[in-house]
Amino acid sequence: MLREEELLVSYRDLPFALKKANMTEAIPISEEEFSALKRTMRHIAFDNMYMPHMYVQVTGHCNFNCLHCFAAKDNNPRVSEISMENMVRLMDMARDCGICSVGITGGEPMVHPQIREIIRGFAERGIAVAYFFTNGYLLSQDILDLFRELNQDPLIWVSFDGIGTHDVMRGVPGAENATLKAL
Image 1: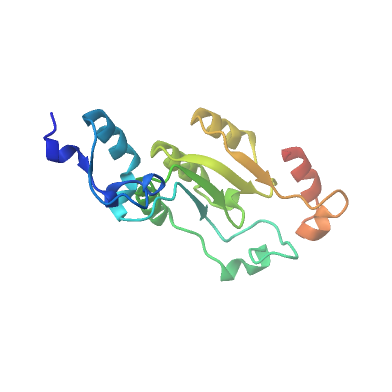
Image 2 (image 1 turned 30 degrees about the horizontal axis):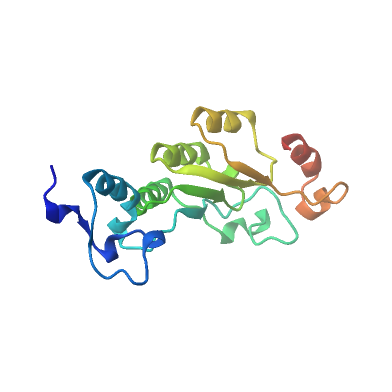
């Protein structure tokens, strides 16, 4: 049983969405309410304003050479990729901050050699993969099966420049057919 002073929540401890401009004193709440509130306040571990979603560029590398893009494969020596060690640290911090969902992007996230481990890592930390941005060329059934296995249902954004122009814009012969197949 919690003591009465443990059942008081101060203005500073309330999640951002619950703050009221005129609230200046602690308010009494039940033990049940306190437990529920603590679950929604995981972000306080880092004293940040609660932001439930983030985007992660897992790599700057890409398998296409798009005319309009900084991540074109011609620029590969100039771009980098997050290491799995740093990715794990980022995923842990995101969990501890109360991040609920993530958008995975790149470059092309499918070229990251550990993309499956990254997807799995977010799911294991209770962070939903809400968006997955890809050019579609490397999108495969095993990635879709992984999302299903992990009970993840991301909105998969596939970039496409249009029939007859996609290969030219992307700088890769056959890109259009591969992207249409992925769609």
